[in-house]
Length: 132
Image (cartoon, rainbow, N blue to C red; front, side):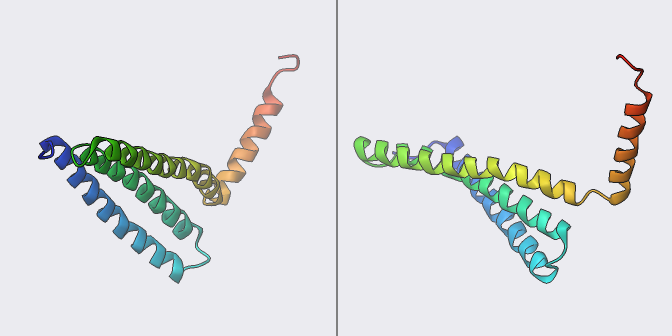
């Protein structure tokens, strides 16, 4: 049975996204290898890895859609379930990297911004009327 055109397009798009993001991961990891003490390079590499994980999850969804069109129904059901588990692992991996990106964002906040924030909080606390 031929695959549906929209599924084929979606899978082609997902494959292209994986390829594009994979090149970004390669670039950011190379930059990090050259600048091992650069927090921004680390943040870029982690962000690229997260995007790659999300792109892979989308590609696995497309593969699962194609699997439904191929093969014996019982085997296909098992394969689709396995692919769904893989997709869920990838999606979870992409979600758990967000706190790491938050930490890295905090590391890359310029000291002047942190100092301004600290002073603003002091000012705000001092200017709050007593009893409010």
